[in-house]
Image 1 (spheres, rainbow over the protein chains, first blue to last red):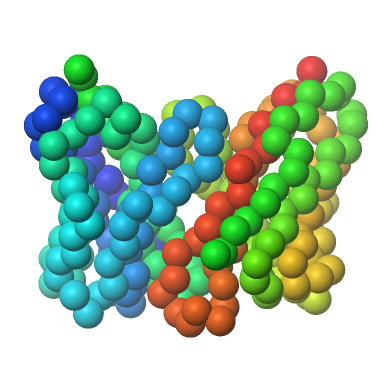
Image 2 (cartoon, one colour; image 1 turned 180 degrees about the vertical axis):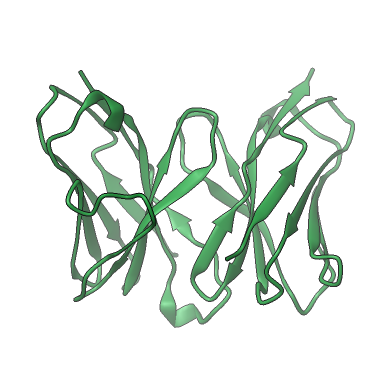
Length: 110
Length: 118
């Protein structure tokens, strides 16, 4: 079955700096890769996603890149703000089967 | 669109009590819903896949007699934690996606239920 790894597990950055979170997956059949942000005690919320037919997608300060050959994808957050502090989960999906990474706790220091 | 509602948000009860959690798709029909359990500072662990009109599919290691799932309509799935014990205390969260949007669509999560068994 699919296995998703995510690094780093924790990440601290200064406000205004960039943050990068990386994920790898094992199943080449996976073709959809969403990223979720979860604040403490709240639901995971979709922040960006990418499908296997594109290599990069950007939405304001957030971007995701996908390398299908290497089976890895990354989340990039630029100009980080304190409200970006949360746990971020990547996921790899085929059909309705989702496998989530272990999460990255991002702390943006003012 | 694609709103998922989950109730209750918080439950505190005595050991031995059975607790029912509801997950509703508000603006779409969900033939499939997913139930997750999340321990503190951990990722989402899939417990089972809830299928409308048929039996749920449980992940390895999840007791189906302990965690009863019913998906009687296209907009409602319920998870019942039977005879709950302190080790069942956790954050339970459901999700669903709109099948009319096709494949490769995000899962939309409910608000989650924090269950505390005394």
